[in-house]
Length: 52
Image (cartoon, rainbow, N blue to C red; front, side, top):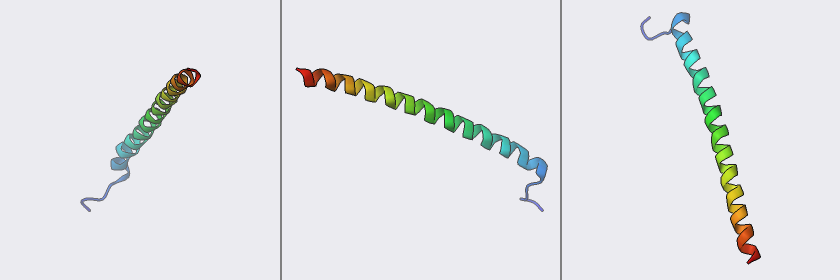
């Protein structure tokens, strides 16, 4: 039947979804580390201002 995927057709899609998931996880980790650094900078700045 046209439109149905055979096992051979499914393989590239499975590989692509694994790669997408790995890229998504890497990007989330990167965003979390950037967010943490920004929060630390904000806390450092507010700490300086609160002492004045």
